[in-house]
Image 1 (cartoon, rainbow, N blue to C red):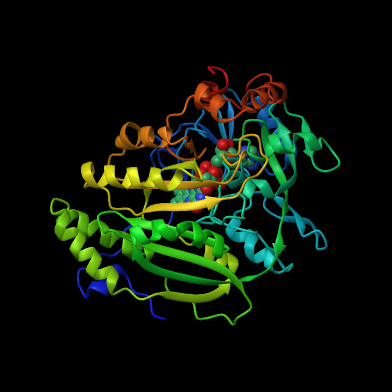
Image 2: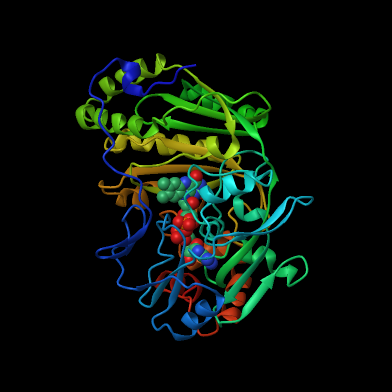
Length: 452
Ligand SMILES: Cc1cc2nc3c(=O)[nH]c(=O)nc-3n(C[C@H](O)[C@H](O)[C@H](O)COP(=O)(O)OP(=O)(O)OC[C@H]3O[C@@H](n4cnc5c(N)ncnc54)[C@H](O)[C@@H]3O)c2cc1C
């Protein structure tokens, strides 16, 4: 079935070209910055070691701290430092593959988007992916990056082993044979224990997914959400602020034939929501009417393809994001309070809110360590101010028992984290043991682990 952008669905003719082009967090003329450029340019040296020996030398010599970076897609202060920002771009291959166990050793600096087609050649795939796949494997796992699915854990839960150079400059392997008790500590490690060079991942057989996308009244989606999570391998929805409507997305395994792929129009859709905000922000009634009319006419998307080609897509319009993970029985109520607050007080918001579910795992610093959670994400257009996320939205998430995504905007302190994570002090002790001189500490991590 045909899929059109919101505006096309409205029959309007003000299609705005997407200005932003896809960009990594990267060195700019001014210095390293994260993807959304919410972090000020950093003067730190950018180091790209060729092998483990060069990495060790770097750790031994750099003054002002060393921080590993992946593709720079985090908003929290995990990467900035005065010494060296280390990119693992040369650690990007596929190592030993165990077809029977469906595991593979993978370069820690490899991008998920490069790993997926390479794994497909071995008949393997990641069990699940998030909205994008440009992150590095180490970067994505280190902050507990997740997709959606009642029975699908975050990517870090799939780590079966890893090799790193610790903050003290020592080689260390954690695997079924070596230091296995440290695996749950290292799965979500924020780059605070060591710099990972290889990661052994649990994979699944390469598979195809059937993707469906449709709009429905938000109240109906809230009522049906639990059933939709039960009935579908992957289910998520986006609430379009000021519309009363939500876009639902499901993915289920299929053996049906592939259908032709289309141009992904989600960036155009977001810019059209911005246009409506710009023109009708002060006329919420009109904004809602136009949105509802457009959505009512929007046809379903119904496609089949390789899992990795459907689960992730490009995000070319830059934004800032806060995402909290909430207990299952509180997630939808928190979303509803956030929606009501934003529609009452923040007419500038136009990015859809995202609502997903992630299964439990055992990593010490996984937000899902004690049970599955519903994740709610609020985005703001990168050029817009976003202080209100901390002052108005975070307090709502906190009241509902939310834990912040490690890579996304939040003002949790070390004390807050200690309450949220029973193993937080154990992690802090391990960190101090593996990095006694604090070479991997930066101001953000010092605040978390030393001021707590
Ligand atoms: C557009 C966009 C969409 C996103 N979608 C999702 C989503 O769907 N689901 C979700 O959960 N998150 C999502 N995120 C958040 C993102 O997945 C995480 O912030 C992730 O950590 C970014 O990966 P990265 O490779 O850019 O890592 P970075 O942000 O560069 O680093 C993250 C952490 O990993 C550490 N690290 C990096 N490399 C190594 C290494 N070799 N050894 C040890 N530590 C290392 C860093 O020190 C840092 O602590 C999204 C972010 C953006 C910008």
